[in-house]
Amino acid sequence: MPISVLFVCIHNSARSQMAEEFLRKLGGDRFTVQSAGLEPGTLNPVVVEALKEDGIDITGKATVSVRELIDRGVEFDYIITVCDEASAERCPVFPGGGRRLHWGFPDPSGFDGPAEEKLARTREVRDRIKQTVTDWLAGRP
Image 1: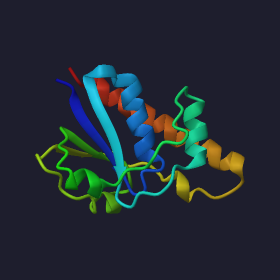
Image 2: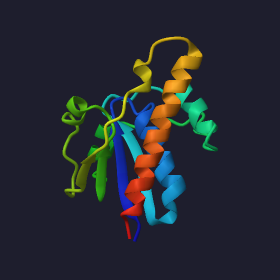
Image 3: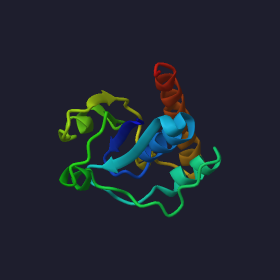
Image 4: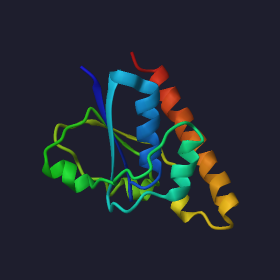
């Protein structure tokens, strides 16, 4: 049976989306994976562009509310927060008592500067998330 994983951040517009897609790509059918936000927004177009560079297209993908998953009673083996520490503390308790992990990454929506600078910094976050997922997978059976 696949291991179920939920990645959570504030808006489900950047970090959780990247983590979801990398686990889906790198973990294959060993995992079922979703992402959600505490206050879902819209996809960050810079993140969409950065993921395309890595062969992943999430154009038009919808963001999901953590509350919606809780209300439906969805259970996960792992709930992994990818926002800052203070925001991770706001993450609600999920039914079923899945194991909680925290992997903090900077939020691309907070990056200032010209478009190329925002993309360069988003690439750094993308690469850190990909490496963290890769490292986590190395410890899985």
